[in-house]
Length: 203
Image (cartoon, rainbow, N blue to C red; front, side, top):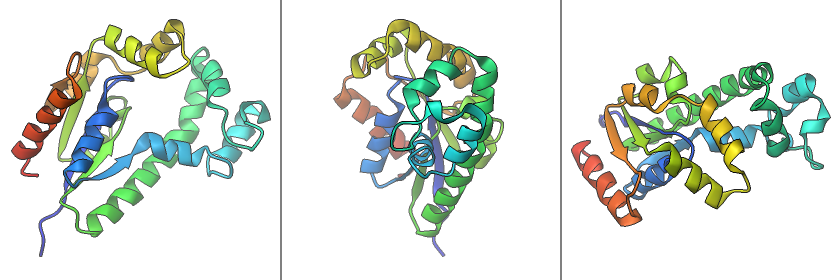
C-alpha cells in the first residue's frame, strides 16, 4: 500500500507570490487545490454561490452574463464589514466543501503531495488540523502594494483596504512550519527556495 499523500498548505497575503510558489510545487509533481480558483468557479455564471449572493445583495453585483461582478462586490465588501461577513458566510463554506472534495479525490488518485493554496488559512481555525505542513510566503506590505498595483487596476487605497481585512503578517507567521521571504527574490531564487523545501519534505 502506497504512503499517504503529503498535504501542504501554502498561504500568504495578496501579492506575496504564494500562487507562484504553489505552481513551482506543481512543477515538481504536486497536485494543486486552489481556493481562489474554486471561489471563481462558484461565482461564475450558474455557479453554486450566485443564487445565495443575489438573495442577499441583489442583481446589481452581477455582470451581464450572470457571473459575480468582482469589482462591484469588492466595492461593497471592503467598505462595509457587515456586507463582507455576509459574503464570507456564503462563499467560505462552499469553497471549503469543494477544497475537501477535490483534495480527497487527489489523494485517492495516488499523488505524493497535495498542495492547498489557501489565502485565508490564518483566518480559519480548521486548516492547521487538516494539513501536514503550512508554508507561509511572506513579504513586506510595500512589496504587496507594488506587485498588486502593477498587475491590476486597483489603486493604493483599494489595495490597502484588502490588506487591512486580511490576517496580519504576524498572525500568518504564527501558523507557519516553514517561511519563504519573497520580498526581493527573483523567480530563479524563488525556484531554488522551493526546490530546497521540497527536498526537505521528501518530494
